[in-house]
Structure formats: C-alpha cells, structure tokens
Image 1 (cartoon, one colour):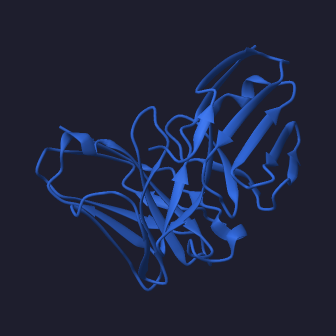
Image 2 (cartoon, one colour):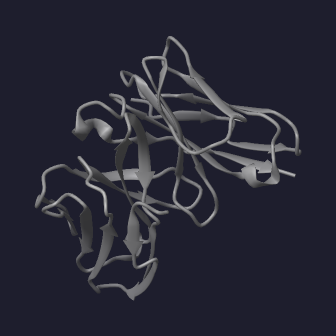
Amino acid sequence: DAGVTQSPTHLIKTRGQHVTLRCSPISGHKSVSWYQQVLGQGPQFIFQYYEKEERGRGNFPDRFSARQFPNYSSELNVNALLLGDSALYLCASSLYGLAGVRAYNEQFFGPGTRLTVL
Amino acid sequence: TQLLEQSPQFLSIQEGENLTVYCNSSSVFSSLQWYRQEPGEGPVLLVTVVTGGEVKKLKRLTFQFGDARKDSSLHITAAQPGDTGLYLCAGVLATSGTYKYIFGTGTRLKVLA
C-alpha cells in the first residue's frame, strides 16, 4: 500500500511569493495534518483537517491556510513568504481527528517538502 | 513554553551501551507516541502508549508511560549504529475545546561503531 505522498519534494521561492504544497493520505485515512520543521527542531503543528473540516490549529499566522478535498487529499498554502518560512513541511495522515479515539492519534508522515525562501 | 521536554538533548554513545531518553510534561496526555526521524525524512512511528504505567517492548526498545500520564521514557538496550537518529515523543493537547498535536524537543542520538 502507498504511504503518505507529498509534492513537490523541493521548492525554492523568493520573499513575498505564494506557495502551495500538496499531500495525499494513506488510503482509508480521513485526517491530514500539516507540520513545519525548522532545522534542528521538532515538528511544529500547523493544522489538522478531518472530514474536510479544520479540527486543530497551531500558532501560525493567517498567511498559512489549508484545505482538504473530498478525496481527503490536502493543500497547504502560504502567502507573502518570509525568509523564516524556510523549513521542511511535513504532512501526516491518521484514521481519525485529534478528538477521536485516543489510540488513533498516531500520525503517519510523508517524506516532506523542503521549502527554501530566498 | 515547551509542553513536552525531552532529555538529554544530545547523546553520543558506543555500540553496545544502554541508554534512556525521557519525555516530561506538566500536562496529562491521553496517549503519547514515540517517533524516530532520520535526516531529510518524515518521522516514523515507533509505538503508542495509552494506559498509565504501561510498558511496551519493541525488540531492544522499551517504552514506559508514567502512572499519571504526564511523562514517558524510552530505553534502548545494546544500542547499534542503526539506532542513530532523532527521537521524538508527541501527543494531543486539548485546551478550551481546541486540539494540537505537540512534539517534544527531541533527542538526537548517535551510536558509534
């Protein structure tokens, strides 16, 4: 079975530009979460979507937005890019949302998209 | 404020040694997950602990959830170079009806042959 897939793998943008990152979850998983991981740190939670609705949000500015499609794939959009947005962006899928059965909080991660903002 | 503190932050040991990584919080978690991440890749789930006091074993790795569900530990017996990586604990934090998936500060382990 295919795992979580993300595209693109690498991306270079300049300050002020907009970027869209894409993620396809594991088949049967209805939840997608997005994380930002800066070099040397653990992942920081950005959003979770479950059944196409936002179910969790981290401490990120409104420049960050996301959506989930009927096939449960997801997009993360970042507007007005800053140098500090350079990071590895990780997508994870899970069976249920964060408020679901506690054992199913397990997240299965994709390989990530490496975003560099110049 | 970091809600899940891991210690040590860095660890470099010789092959065959034992080690323990700690994950501590002042908050109660309904479950905690442990992941291992290698450079340039996403974290890989190792285990989930759910019940206070629970102990789970995965080959040479032993995971324990604290009785109060505020802390967890990972013990590796006879470490091997293949154990090298970033070890992360994580869990769901619910505050005022909102949910976040929180990762620990991470422990970077290097096992020397």
